[in-house]
Image (cartoon, rainbow, N blue to C red):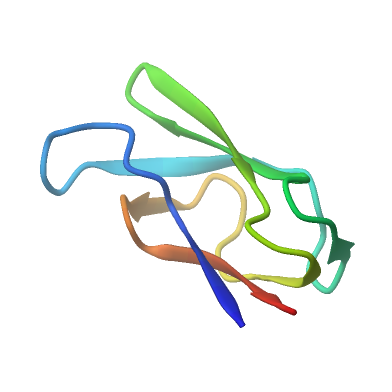
Length: 77
């Protein structure tokens, strides 16, 4: 099991962002480095690749506001 955190896109503590888009669905099989989400904070955005191959489990819906570092998904390898 590998946790996928919301990436740190800002140096400001307690910064929150949103999961703008999931490119995968809950329970989908993914490959390592496959893009699984796009996240945004203020004026910055980033794509989130899968850190490993396996089955992805999504923990937050699209447009959910979450703090940087919060686990947004898990990959069961």
